[in-house]
Length: 257
Image (cartoon, rainbow, N blue to C red; front, side, top):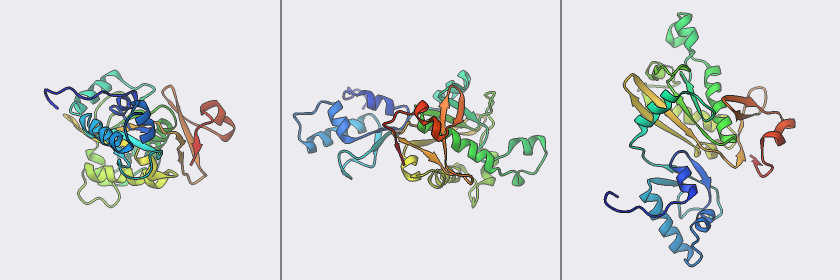
């Protein structure tokens, strides 16, 4: 919309510009104070506003009921490279974490000298999923994969060969695998996946992934061989929460799915 003024934006839409944000059509209509509009008029105008701000609604407007939970998230971000480089420069914090890989056991490969095709690690994958779970259950956050803890960009390219069933060995297969693991390893995985946005960032030193995770109203539970697990973010740490500690970390309005 070059040369044109964009329509007014609410606090919910502002939040959605940075990471996936839960809401409902009813909440958005109330937020815009459209008491004098019919439902069809309000939904039509809302659709135009989302388009103007490059936001997408999942599930789409026109499906389900007005009170159904929706996720708003950005469709484009022209400054994604610069934003990611700035985050790397600032370093990790409560809402930003670096992961060197998704499935590659770096210590085994680099320090142990093992061939890369023997270095797939379910433990490394689980560490990524735990961080995603913690952000979902807290206030959201950003996970940058392909960057070491000290901020060195190492890229993801070397681990493309480790993605199960990979044939192209590229970022698309890497992203599809992470999506599949979110669907499989979380209760209500498909619903959870809507609050996770995965973006490719072409850095000079290699391909990295920017994973934006939005907070959810429901408790997001990670499945495990030894039982279901709940994780939260406290400061720079991801912590496992037992049932006896739920009231310490969660508002009672949160629902268990």
